[in-house]
Length: 219
Image (tube, rainbow, N blue to C red; front, top):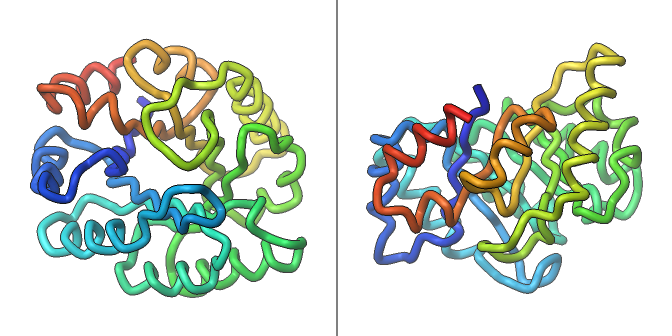
């Protein structure tokens, strides 16, 4: 069964009580989309820190942090005190191989799982050398930066390729997909080989969190 990481990107500040509703619906993770207005156009830094603070006060559901930022060290430091389940950073935000290795080391030495993410246009082969050292790979199935986009079909081939490579090399990491995932696209995402699906608008804008969560997990 594919796990669901619910993105809080489309949750308005006045509706943050939905955190509890998502827990009742049995989301597997709260997905925290941290955007700095530089790496991507939107800026959610303040709002996501506030959401994460509130989550830690009322819920034990694991936190799944996705950093879409340029200044990686600063934002990694911001989230380490929350003891998230994992912190994922973008390969494209790193200037070189050393930078990627530094981020992996920084996150892991603080007892947090580490994920590496790539945009739709980045070849999955570019991160193969880092796969033995990470806990998760996040494949963006839309351009990062805003919610409610349509899944880019070509990205499913990257997921399939990554899944095959993992099997061939006997590697141990999860594959997560993020962007445009809903009841219509979930079958294709599941078939491609993901372990975790990030779902935002399809859940947050639904009238019954319990029902849609159940349907997503049954696919």
